[in-house]
Image 1: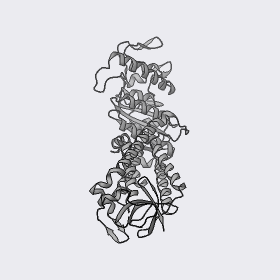
Image 2: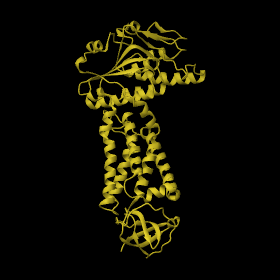
Image 3: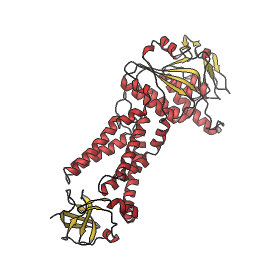
Image 4: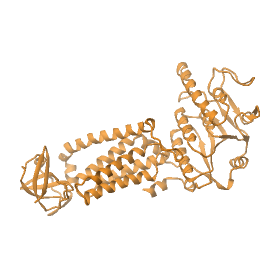
Length: 453
């Protein structure tokens, strides 16, 4: 699994080391896939002890909600962050630039014009626009002030209906939104640049002016997997459902077959997608694998003890949950409702669908011809058997005390023959080999419990 995860990363991303200056491209519209990529790089850089991160920005803007997510991610890292406007930081790009500690401009570049618009570029209805500008201007003013910028810049970028001044000078008149050229962005007001530290020709020159080691610069590029990760995380309950149902079918059928392979693939896709999305690392997948191993130890070596199975199940459920929780290496582990709400909802949906699916499988699937072939393609005491069972074997046709022969390995569920009748049975706390003599110990509804004679 770790090898697969590693192969999904661009080569450059694997070379981030202590002291690296990580350069991340932010090109084209700001999208959720771009956020996934940046979040993963930020966490990798934080874990490796990087010296700084530079956003090499050329964007016309993008989704406001995604912009907020990127700003939140940038606020959680402890190393210095820079934006190099090269050449455009329009709309959302301007707000993201304010979320970094320092801004530098290319000689011919522009930043600003962050008034909200609809996804197609149309104007936002007046009432909605007033609400959005009121909320987000307040939000991004706090971001700007935290990073040492003049908070009035946000109103100038976003609010058409507000005149913005610095001292007695009108920075932006009412009825317009502000766009700064490189030369305007570095203009000083009260001995301090309006927004940008300097105008530079390249990322390398930025490093020289900022005192960053050019020789340790690492440029990373997004792979083609970020957009796939977007779909995987959105469809997480379905992949969990496939993994759980596949594991149930594998448990109910002898040997290792298609169901087990499909279950493993679903869980692998689930963890891989959340890794690419920057949500989880190798350690969460390792906890899941440990949980599986504990359940196997229970089934193979200590059937009926339940301690190992209970612990393994708890580890698996926790790993599935925390694969969706957004932790940052430099942040203290502090679980909150907001952090857990989304993952809990997705996991809850998957578990409810799994219970419903398992009930349907238990009730209807044994009567289907395909499933009959799947179940009976196994090694019995008499050798391989592919004979379809009689439908009558799914009815309780035995009584307490009846004796029979195990037709399959009971681990603990399987099939047994009582006279000419095939019956689904469950062993009482132990594995039973094919051909072993058994006795019916109890009948609980349609559940027939047996033990060795």
